[in-house]
Length: 155
Image (tube, rainbow, N blue to C red; front, side):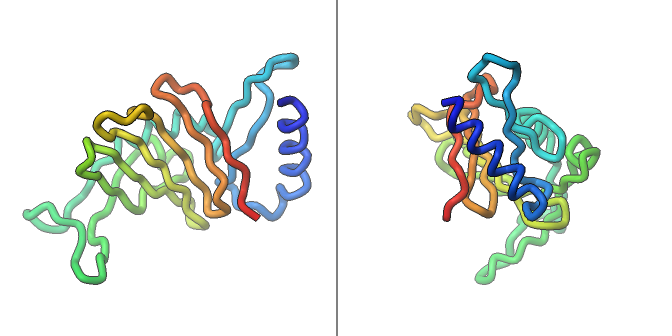
């Protein structure tokens, strides 16, 4: 595991200049531990996941509808002071009829990241949260905020 973390760290250093600022930063918590942490815009990824729940939807009409069909144009705006402090903006939000799963798209003006919070009925991953980047890399946290899975960027 340490070799993988080391390789990811070296790869991140080499590619760091070309990656958007919202790419995850993985680093060892403490020497000798196998634990890995993730940061997004200098903030703990888990703290960002928790902060998206504070997002307020601002509807353009009294019908509380965000989308115009068939082109699914989003007319809503989103307010989240906690994320705005770290220069992230919620640009899209969806709630699913599967038990309340939620998908948030965040941006700092460059490429966007997606946070999916699983709330499917009967799902073994109910409460898990996954952050995905445009390069197809992702990290997944359990409901207590432990990093349980990380997927490297797709080739």
